[in-house]
Image 1 (cartoon, helix red, strand yellow):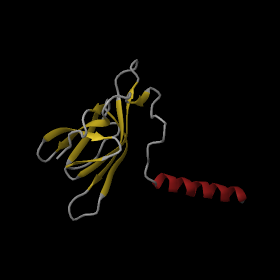
Image 2 (cartoon, rainbow, N blue to C red):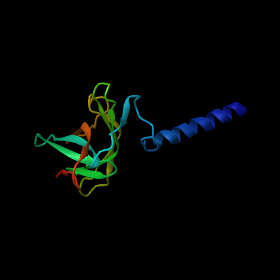
Image 3 (cartoon, rainbow, N blue to C red):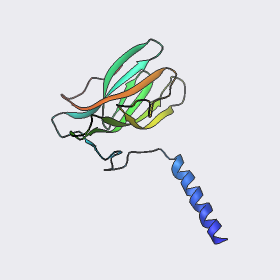
Image 4 (spheres, rainbow, N blue to C red):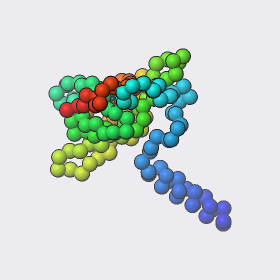
Amino acid sequence: MRGLVVIAVLAAGMGVAAAQTPRPPANVNPGINLRPIPDAPGKRVAELQGLDKVTARTQRFYAPVGQTTRFGTLEIAVADCLVNVPEAPPEAVAYLTIVDNKPGQAPEKLFAGWMFASTPSLSALDHGVYDVRVLACTMAQGSAPPSSR
């Protein structure tokens, strides 16, 4: 009987953990060859590409790591941006949280997780109006990288 109680408590705990918002683990890379961008002058940014499906326009923009950037009604927060080691094939991976802020409606979280530049369909934003994908992780020069609309 006590074994059943322990199993029930563990199952309930796993349900609560699964419902929490995923966050990038501190100092843990999603792949063995991935690492932060090497230190250089400037600010770490994720280079993203957004597609507005209504107007069929694409736009490249920079989203600073640790800050929120707007693309249309979307707010895109970049928690981390990693690249492959030089001896491995090129890859950029960013941990993004994307929230849709439509006027007159409550904010809706659309995506929270790692996005891979080499395979955008692996973990993609599913939205009727916008597509967002990671292109690269880089260092932006100057005080503020270009922003989106």
